[in-house]
Length: 325
Image 1 (cartoon, rainbow, N blue to C red):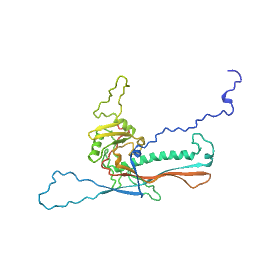
Image 2: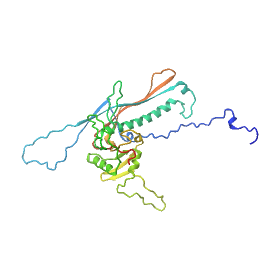
Image 3: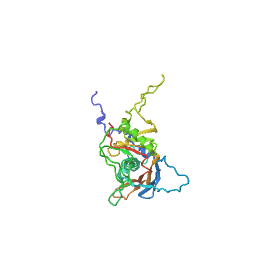
């Protein structure tokens, strides 16, 4: 190297090279919330009725000419839930908004970027709540109200030793039992139970680890594809759909269910989207709060609940190991 060559390390104020983009490839999906309908509600406590048919009786016959006798008529039973305010906040100094920043939109506002980010995060919070919440909590001046999720609604279930089903009519959460391996027979039994109770078992929703476990089951099928000479060979290493005696069930992995929370990473659900609704008291809204000092405060919020028209056509496999094995 020639003497006195000017090297970059000694150059004063080399122009920085910063890409004007902020990357975020973290998962933002919420499969259950995306699949089910929305309905409006008018109170923080909601109720709905469910009914059922009597058991078929092949001996039901009448004597010719006899007087009619009248059977007791069971009334519909009630289910209920409460709303949950799902919210997040941000405080941004006025100086932060004044300086030039990379990766924001044309307005250069950090508030605009964070509002969008918060809504995605809250959507996933709702997903976790409507799946894993075991019982409602009545809101007070010092306690946040909580909704009941699938974990607390479904009484048609199987669980480990020491476990117990929930009772949504008395707001009793399920009792966790001893974890055990997920088996093929558990799934087949669950699909059959859904069918016998009026469901179609159109989907299985589970953690990614349990999806991988399901793909190791045989289900009495061949795992190869017949391919032509011009086509690439394909090895089937996964099940996306399971055909049983009662129809076709789609297996849906849910990234939110990877979170280490009871009712998420230790439970598998079988059900139909038409049995469920997200009940919305207040849609997503963003409000600027009172200004305190040299900063602006914001709150992003919504208030929702879950309606399970009837939990009997749904099924829960509880107390399964995180890996399924």
